[in-house]
Length: 284
Ligand code: AMP
Image (cartoon, rainbow, N blue to C red; front, side, top):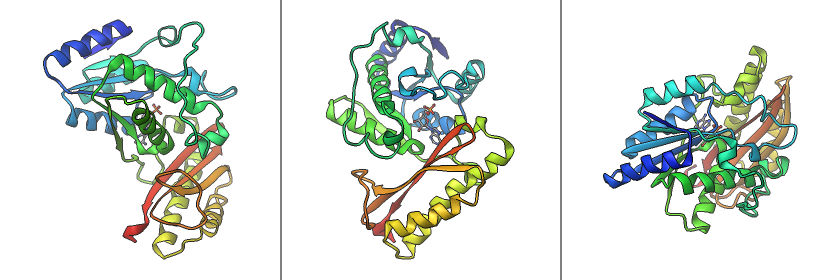
């Protein structure tokens, strides 16, 4: 496994692999790798011949007062995980390389970034799409892998790639959960043992939503009210939003129809946690 710290070096490694006819897979991450990231890497290893993982804590997707400074950066552990999962290149650029002293070019996906997390994290998705556009231009993968855990992010990236005609396939991998249902996240490290127990109510609320839809309930207000009740059982949870939106447009709906995305964002202590499920109503 190679560790590329410069744009030039990752480009020449990818160029050599492509020259041998290899299909290039790419997994962008902010490091602090866990089994969620590993599932993406495994999918990439399966589908591609040459896998690049980027590790870059992207400053432009963090808002003022968010956790950019304290975001975990266990770089050596991350390299070990990459080595053990069959990664070919880890691309770990410096901030200076990714952003010139004054970055004047931004990529912004409209509308889709105004709902859900976009309402609470202004500028977040502009940072995500800009860094992904840069990374896609640097790595030039055939396929890039993202997690359903960050559903809106995956959705927005897919739209950016389509709108800008980037020749990249986007594969979305299922959310990896602990046995108690908690979605695995680098930010779970911020939680105390009690808060980790409280955090399991997030997935419980999503399961309740699924059960209600399965039972034929279509009134989204009724469903979100029940989800709120479940979340309120956990003393440390502060709800940011509970939303049921159309899975294709991310628009809020009064009544369930076709495929819906049920998404929850909460604050527990200093952590902001998100989770979601897709419910295919036509199959109920
Ligand atoms: P991050 O390092 O948090 O920016 O995440 C990098 C990628 O890993 C993103 O595409 C995330 O959606 C994905 N990811 C994070 N947690 C999980 C999880 N629990 N299951 C599946 N994918 C995940």
